[in-house]
Length: 323
Ligand code: PBG
Image 1 (tube, rainbow, N blue to C red):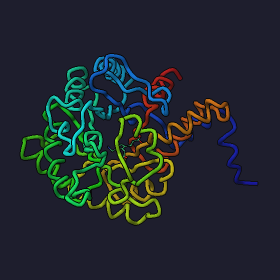
Image 2 (cartoon, protein in one colour; image 1 turned 90 degrees about the vertical axis):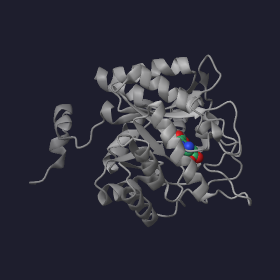
Image 3 (spheres, rainbow, N blue to C red; image 1 turned 180 degrees about the vertical axis):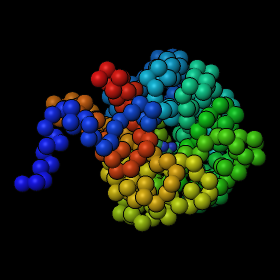
Image 4 (cartoon, protein in one colour; image 1 turned 30 degrees about the horizontal axis):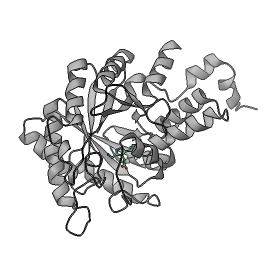
C-alpha cells in the first residue's frame, strides 16, 4: 500500500501540523443586544448564556472583547418605544446610537464597532422597513431611511455598518450617503444573502420583536441557491466591502458559492437558532458542548467564511487562549 492517509492522523502533533482550517479570535465577531432603560443585564430564555445588556454591562463586554482580541462586536439596540417609522433608529439619543458611542468611547480603534443597520428593532409592526398605504414594505422609502440611519451610526462612531434589511439598492444609497457626509472610511458589511429562516426564532425574543407575519417578501426563499449569487454580486457592485451569508450552518453551500464568486472578505452569521440548538442538546447531555461549538465554527470557516459572527465568540476566544 502506498497511500495511507491515516499516517497524517496518527498523533495530535501531526494532526495539528496538517490542519487546514483554524479558529482565531480576530475573525470572530460577537453580536450583542443593548436594551434601553434597564440597569441590570436581562437573560434571554431561548438563548441561555446570552443577555440583553444594560449600557453599563455592555461596556464591560466591549472591554473584554478587546482583551480577548475579538474581531469586533455587532450591536443591536432594544428600544423602549417603537413607532411605525422606526424613528428611534435615526435619533442620536436612540439606544443603538448611544450604544455605538459608548462602545467607541470604551475601545477606540482597538476593536471594530459594528452596528446592525435595519429598522425591525425600531418599528412597532416589526418589519425591516416602513409600510405603504397597503401595508406592504415600501422598498424605496425604506432605503432612503437606511441612508440616514447609516450616517447616524457613523456619526455615533461605528467603524462598520451592517445593512440587514434585504431591500433592493440599499448598499448603493447607504454608501453614497456615508460618502456625502464625509464617512468614506466607514466599512459596509452587507448581509448579502439572507434567508427567511426559522433559525432566527430566539433572536425575536432577544430584541422584543413585535413582528406579525413573516419577512418572505424581502428575505430569500430557503429553496434558492443561484439567487444568492445575484444578491451578492449586486451588493459588491454597489460598494459592499464585506459580504455576509446568513444563517450559516444550513447554508454552507451558499457560503462556498459566495466565497468562490467574490474577492471581498466573506462573513457568515451563526444565528440565534443555531446557538439555541447546540445549547439545548448540550443541556440534555446529548452532545459534547465545547466540541460541538468548535466543530460548528470550523465547518463555517471551512466552507469559506473569513469572518464568523457567533454568540460564542468571547467564550471560544477564551478557550483558544488557554490552549
Ligand atoms: C434584522 C436581523 C435579524 C437577525 C439579525 N439581524 C432578524 C431577522 O432578520 O428576522 C437575526 C440574528 C439571529 O437570529 O441571531 N435586524
